Length: 42
Image (cartoon, rainbow, N blue to C red):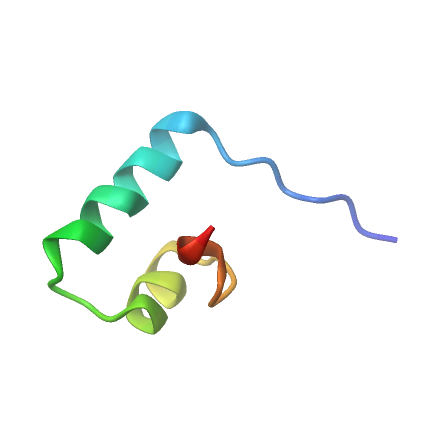
């Protein structure tokens, strides 16, 4: 079984700020930052 990846606060902040800028869709952000598609929603 694979271990869950823990994301740092700094990484979450970077992704959140990128999402707020609105330059990319959530799907693009998820692919760029290599997270699941619904992760930026959480």
